[in-house]
Structures are given as structure tokens and as C-alpha cells.
Length: 439
Image 1 (cartoon, rainbow, N blue to C red):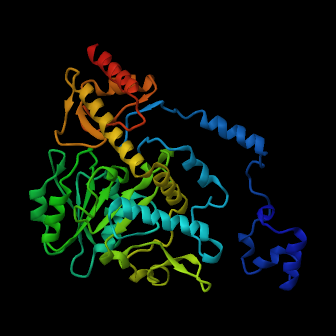
Image 2: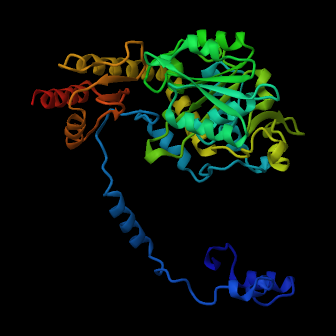
Image 3: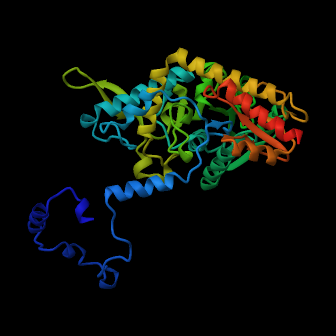
């Protein structure tokens, strides 16, 4: 590691002399001799920058990049304006971590503050944190912040993303709390079953909107049922859809969570992503992670600082409701840039086109013999069809450079379309499906 330490050899020698040592090995005098490395590791020697670049390009060439993507299931291929990619790569911002020294980090702190502000405007909620690791983590954190001594059970819709359900289950397991699945009916949360499950020990109910099958839930009715049982209502949202759908505040959510990938983050093999969390003012002090606040310095100038974080998250971990001490600063900056670059009307247009193209794809597919919708309810950007010869169809699409929908149950496919998909692309995909079904 010596060559990676930002100090010259003479500076290192000066530091050693200052503590009464001559060699770096003396720093490890208390380490047993058998634990010390006496000869170089048996690994290949380092490569030059040119060799590394060539090697990485060769590995990248093995990836298959699809020109047309008709799959979502939690990761969505949206258009990203060029400025959204450019600014986060500037060295002043290129960090994923939280700035501790406010006096040194006003630019990054302000970018997080602006992100928080825009999330509140988008969701209608009163306060947003500076983000957590991803959407699934955000759901797990929301379940934790809603529990108390008497109410320890978390309900989650079986129509939520499977990865979100499993993450919340892990959170509950670690806290010796119980997770119960609310069953589905016709692709949506069974409201009658939910009402029966809202017992006095239930702390919160987590609903995904749109759900994993693309269906739009009756979030307002679910929220009213949850509140009637004196439990907390957590709504997991696709943030881009909120440009045209009712906000979490409008349907009565106490906590909003979501995956921010659709706000300017590329698919990128599953990350890094962005866990969005926002809440009502009543829940503000229970929000995990970071919150950046705006204040003034002693000269009266506007300033930004980290604020409102429970110290238990750092020093009394066993008593903390959350142990998340960081955030996704670079991803939050990217999401903030996306929202600023697109603006309210741009985001509305992206959401409207996404909806329109998904419905166009659904209509064209369902004209084909044997293809039909699995669920008839309203949907946003994803839908499930019954598809004969499913594996052959998906293989033919793959051969044509098209990533087809996600296989679900027997002969079922979860399709997705976004504003990036042109009508010509969708028509070409449908024609390939038609050819396979005709054989």
C-alpha cells in the first residue's frame, strides 16, 4: 500500500522519527511473528493503465447490450438527459458518502438539501431524508420506524416486489418482529383480507404502487382501512409515476418509500441505486439516516448542515430503530439533477408517454391468438400476459436484440414499456411474437 499513501518517502520517515521509530515494521511489534507477511503474495504483478483498459474493454465486450428493453420488474430503462450524466462525474461531487465537515462541503450539502426539497414536492410529504441504500432497504427501514412496544407486526402486500418482501422479512427477523403477507386477488391487494388482518398488534402496512404486476392499487382505500385500525400506512412508489398519479400525501400515507433508479440512474447491472424515504412531520424524528438542514452562519450567510439524526444510530446501536448512518449522496445528486433537468412538465410527459406506450404494447400483443391479459385492472408501465410458447417467444426476441418480458408463472410474462421505446420498436417486437406463435 506504500505507493498509494499520499506522502513522500521522506515525509513518512519524518513521521516515524517523530514517534521514535525507524521502520514501518515497528508499528506492528505487537502482532505475532507468524501473522506477518515475510514474502510477496502469490498474485500477478500489476498492469499498466493501457493493459488494464484493454482488459476491462475485453470483459465489457462479453456483455450483451439490448437495443430494445421490454423488461422492468424493478429496474427501468428511462431516458437520461446528458447533463444528468455529466455533472455527477465532476470531481467535486464524485463521492457516494456523506460529508461530515459542513464548512468544507457546502456544495454537496446543498445538492442533498435540494434533492430532499424536490422529493417533498414530488410526494407531497413534509420531510425527506438524504436517501438510504435502495428501495428495498427503505421499505425495511419504514417497517422499523413504525414499530413500537405494543405494535410489532408488519403487514406487506403479496403483490409487492419479491425482493422488497424478502428484505423487509430480513429486517423483521433481525428485530424479532413478525411479517405477515396480505394475499392478492386478481393481481391486487385483497382489501377484505387486509381488514381481517389488521389486528391490534399490527404496526404498519406496506403497499406498493404500482405493484409488482404493474397494477394500480386502491391506495386511498387501503390507507383508510389501515388508519381505522390505528396502524401506520407505508406506500412504496415508483417516483416517476407520481408526476401523474395521486401523491402519497393525497392517499394518506404516513411514510413514503421507493426506488429512485428511474430518476436518472442507469440500469447498470442492478446498482448502485437510491432508497427514497419521506414522511409526515409527525414521523420526522423517526426517519433513519441523514437529513440536511438549511441555516445561517455567524455572518448571516445561508449555510447547510447535517441535522436531526438520532445519536443512538452511532453509539447505542442496540437501542436504535435504525443503524443506517450514511446515504447515497452521489445517486441522490443524480436524482436531483434529473428532476431539475426534466422539470415538472418533463416528468409528467415521460410518465404519460410511458403509460401510453405500455398500453399500446399490451393492446397489440393481446390481438395475437392465445395472448391475453392476466389481470384486467388499470396499470402504469407493466402488465402480465398469458403467452403461449413463452420460452420460444422470448428466445426469438433475444436473438433479435430485444430483451423480452420477465417470465413469471406457467406461460406468464411481465412486460414493460417506457418513454424510450418507439412505436417502431414495439411493432417489431409484436411481429416477432406473431411469427413464433404462427409456427
